[in-house]
Image 1 (cartoon, rainbow, N blue to C red):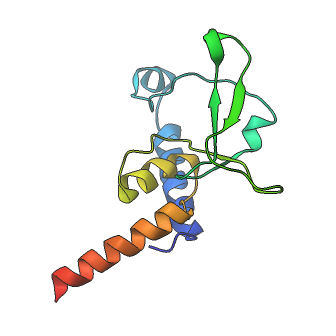
Image 2: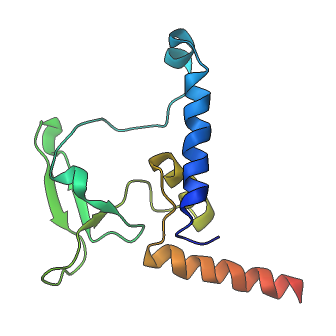
Image 3: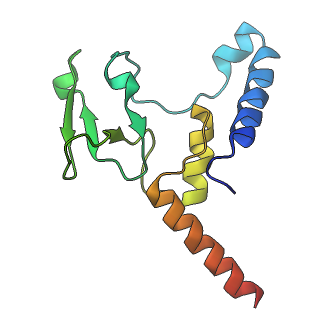
Length: 127
């Protein structure tokens, strides 16, 4: 359960590609897709990395084609800006599973903390 295990993320992406490649266009159109609030491409925002403990939030005010990015935690000069790609209320296992759709395994500070907590709980059960 190494947060840097790119082999797991690559295998999940390869499996998803195989599933999509095996479907006809009709099947793809009828298949369930991940729930998305909307899709847009903003070159600057597209470069903001994910964290399950983000320091920024992106909003689309009044359903316009503009976006607003604002800090939701104190920022230090030079600190990386991060946003959450998923809902933050899920447990570490569920979040990591959801983020496989983005092609990576999250290793943010929150996931590392919660992974350690899961390991401690499992070890207590084994004793």
